[in-house]
Image 1 (cartoon, rainbow, N blue to C red):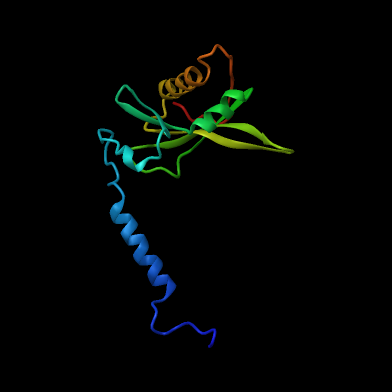
Image 2: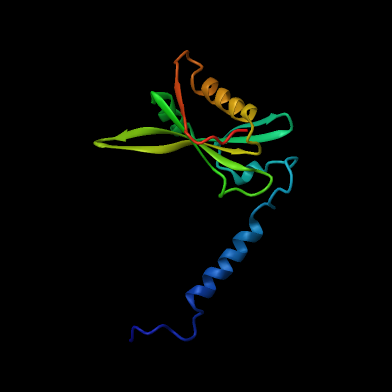
Length: 153
C-alpha cells in the first residue's frame, strides 16, 4: 500500500466541479424583475418572515424564530447595509444586528436579513416599522440605531 492517489479515480477538483454543476441545475432561476414568484421550497421553513411591497418596490425579510427571540431581548438594534452582495433586481442587503451573549462572550450578530429593491427613505421606514411591529407587538419599546452613512435618498 502507498499513500499515492489511485490513478483510476477522478481528481477531487473534477468531482467538486461536477457537484457544483449539479447543484446549480437544481437551484431556481435568478429573478430578472420584481414580479417573480418566490419558490418557498428552496427557503428553510419559517425563515421568510415577510414579503413587503411598497410603491412597486419589493423587500424580503428573513429571520429564524431564535434570531427574533434574540432581537426581542436586545435593547439596541444596529442597522447595516451592503450593496455589493446582491444582484438585480435587488439593490442591497440590509441587516438588523444586536449584541448576543453566550456565557462570557458577547458579539454583535446579524439577526434579520432584508433584501431590498429600493433605497428611498420610504423603503427604510417600511422595513424598520415592520421590524418594530413584528418584534415589539407585546408593547416593548425598542431603540433603533441607524448607521452614520447616508444611504437613503
